[in-house]
Amino acid sequence: MVDVARLAGVSQQTVSRVVNGSDNVAADVRERVERAIAQLRYRPNPAARALANRRSMNIGIVSFGLAQYGPSVALTGIADEARRSGYATNLVTLGAVDRSSMRSALDHLVADLVDGIVVLAPLTSAVHAVQGFDAAVPLVAFEPGGVPSGSTVVTDEEAGARLATEHLLGLGHRTVHHLAGPAGWLATEARIRGWTSALGTAGRVLRPALAGDWSTCSGYRAGAELAADPDLTAVYAANDQMALGLLAAFADAGLRVPADVSVVGFDDIPEARYFRPGLSTVRFDFEAVGRLAVDRILALMGADDVQHVTIPAVGADLVPRASTAAPRSSHRPPA
View 1 (cartoon, one colour):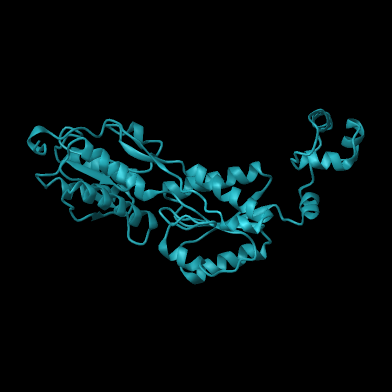
View 2: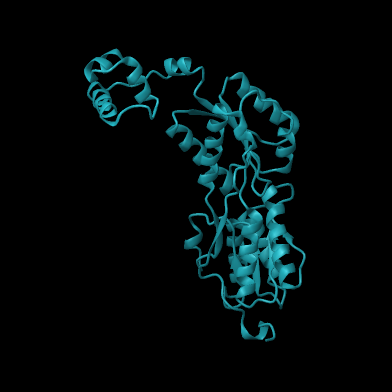
C-alpha cells in the first residue's frame, strides 16, 4: 500500500478508501490510485483488511434442498453478491432439518466468526428451528412463500400460483387440476393457496390436489392417474420437473398437449423452453433473492434499525409457451 500511495501521490488512508470502495474520494484521485494499483499489480491483504474492519469478511450459509431449483439458484445469487461485496462464503448443508441440526449449524458458523448468516429455509421445520435463536450476528432467512419481514426474503409463491391458474381459466378451461409438491415445504403450501384462491374467486370446481415430490417420476405417476379422467383439460404443476413428467405421461396415454390437455409448470428452469411442447410456466428471479439476502446482511451490519424495514417480496411473471391453449370444443364452458 505504501508503494501505491507513493506512486499515486496520495496518503495511505486515501489508497485504503479507494480499495474499500468509499465514495469520499475525488474522481481524479481515484483514477490515479487505480492506475497505480494496476501498474504495481497490488492486491489488498484480506487478513489485514478484516483486522482493520474488525470483521472476518465471511458470510455463513445454512442450506437444505439444494437439489431443487429455487434454493440452488438463490445460493448462486448469495455467493455472487457476497463476492462482489468483498466477502467469502462459508456453507453448511443439512441432510435433514430439525431444531437440533439447525442450531448445531448456526453455532458452527458463529464459532467460525462469520459476519452474518443466510438461512435457506424452504421447510416449515427450518423456520421453526431458527425462531428464537440469538446468533449475535445478523441473520436473514429465505422463506419461499413466507411472510415478508426485516429479516426474511420471500418469493410471492401464492401470487405465482394465481397467475398460473388464472392463465388456464382465461383460456376457457372449466377448472384446473393441481399437482402439488411434498408436504412440509413452504412453497407447496403457498402454491396450493394461490391455486385454491384463483379457483374460488372464479367460482370453479376445486378438485383434490395430487401430491408429488418435485421429481419428474412423481409427475409421470400423477399424469398416468390424471389421464384416466375424461373431463381433464388443464393441469398446473408446482414445479417444472413434475410438469415434464406430466407431459411424458400424457404422451404415453395418447393425449396431445395442448390440444387435449394444457399444462403449466412453475420456476421456469432453463430447460423449460426446450420441453416438447415448450412449457408455459411461472418465473421467479431466484438470483435476486440471494442478492437481497446479502444486501440485507450488509445493511444490518451498519444499522440495527434496518431490521424494522420489511424486505419486499420478490414477484412472479407468467411465461406462456406452447403447452397451453383453449380447451377442445367439447369441454368449453357454456357462454
